[in-house]
Image (cartoon, rainbow, N blue to C red; front, top):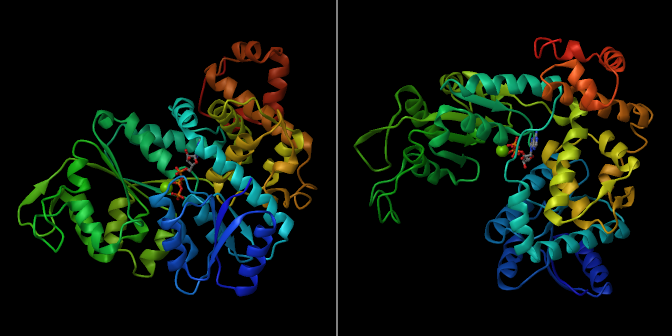
Amino acid sequence: MKHNLLIIEDDKIMRVTLTDYLRSKGHEVVACPLGKDGITVFHKEEFSLVISDVMLPDMNGLDILQNIKEKAPNAVVLIITAYGTIKDAVEALKLGAFDYITKPFALEEFNLIINRALEVKELRDENIRLKKNLSECFSFPNIIGDSPEMNKVYDLIGKVSKIDSTVLILGESGTGKELVSSTIHYQSDRKKGPFIKVNCAALPENLVESELFGVEKGAFTGADRRKPGRFERADKGTIFLDEIGDLSVGVQTKLLRVLQDGSFERVGGTQTLKVDVRVITATNKDIEKEVQEGGFREDLYYRLNVIPIRMPALRDRKEDISPLIDSFLANYNCTFGKKATLSSEVITDLFDYDYPGNVRELKNILERLVGLASSDVITTDSLPKHVAKQRGKTRTTVSLAEVAAEAEKGHIMRTLKSARGNKTRTAELLGISRKTLWEKIKLFDIEKKKAGSGSSR
Ligand SMILES: Nc1ncnc2c1ncn2[C@@H]1O[C@H](COP(=O)(O)OP(=O)(O)OP(=O)(O)O)[C@@H](O)[C@H]1O
Ligand SMILES: [Mg+2]
């Protein structure tokens, strides 16, 4: 099928090569060397797909991505990154890129990704049915994973939900910080109150203050009416300040005061307001380093860091990969009305991969695999290249038997948990004898990992 494609790439040879190649496949192509022009063109015409480089002379490709996704959330954007800039790739996924491709790449590889992206675009376009399903399938998102690392997180969530202390959630991108913050709110006594999220990095610096604390009429040009801030809206509830490491020093000072006594003034106002708000913050930056280097106020850091929750990277808790796959597979099968399963090779490759984008990346991969599945069994051909590329690197250290053992262990731990540690019931549920269950518990070192939780009946 013929599609309208937009390429934003300053390197002339690359731009012309990709344009010619895509035209030879029968597509219409508009190519721009500058980001600014690319965005203008995007808003004038309909495009099935945008392919953008990251390093452009006038703009960063990630800003282009953000701009496009804000105005057209369904747009499918593919980002071209330079070799070794995995950070950009992770950021691109977070901002909603469909995928990334690393330079240099072969045209066949490019073609594969383009075809997948176009299929996704078609899926997104027949979206009304899917959207309805999506909300049904994902209506109760819960946190998946039964690794010892995640059990520590659950413990902390349980404890902090009962009190009002400020929580700082730390961890790499895609590890579930936002998910944890909302879980804390909805398990706390404030659950009937508002849960207000603020992404501090997404707001321009001059707007952060008025967004957070509100603004009086006439405070600055454009402030034509009084507007309450997010703190006021969060009264009796929880405010989640995401990407806290990006706050300017001026706003940090105001924030410190709200944390001290709940009081603040609107921008341009003199009246002091008081609110009853629980504050949860998160960052994927090394905030302690920012404090040492003077970019973040030390006193504020201590106020925020009353209870830290550190989200473990997915690569450090590989046993969670299998239950996450099961859950996302079931959800996307529901969303897309499919019955797809994964071949054992796909499971092995997914297990071997190291997920720089953590759970978000795994979730994206599953969405794509299931959404695009043309038969019931998904094979390795459908895997993104960078996932399959890991093959062989770690294969010598992780055998299929080990993957199966991890899955078995995870399943036993989950069943034990659902049976509240009752081994007779667990053995029944698993369809094995009590003796076999005992042997497996010993083999997988489960009791040690779960020490302190559950009974040992
Ligand atoms: N343990 C988990 N179980 C199920 N889904 C998860 C889990 N962790 C993360 N997710 C899902 O992965 C996606 C990314 O999670 P989330 O937005 O909470 O990450 P984050 O740590 O806030 O990332 P960032 O630093 O990039 O903002 C979400 O769709 C979330 O629902
Ligand atoms: Mg987040």
